[in-house]
Image (cartoon, rainbow, N blue to C red):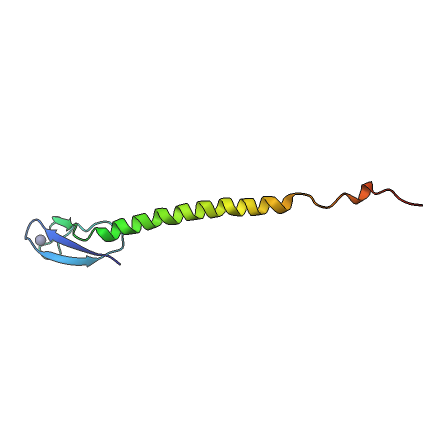
Length: 90
Ligand SMILES: [Zn+2]
């Protein structure tokens, strides 16, 4: 879980908060109680790296799906001759 640095613009109190990326940024200062918190972006590299990883996975799954489609299409070609057309010998 990433750590975010916050600084209160009112009392200059600084602290770290453990948050998931889904969580909204904090607003309320735990020291003075004012809604003056500002998130300090320091180590944003981690977030960028995660974004790139997401796109890589997306591309991989797309090409994988296309390959899977091809594999399925090939054996679909009929190799057996229809038996009903065989002439009956009496
Ligand atoms: Zn404060």
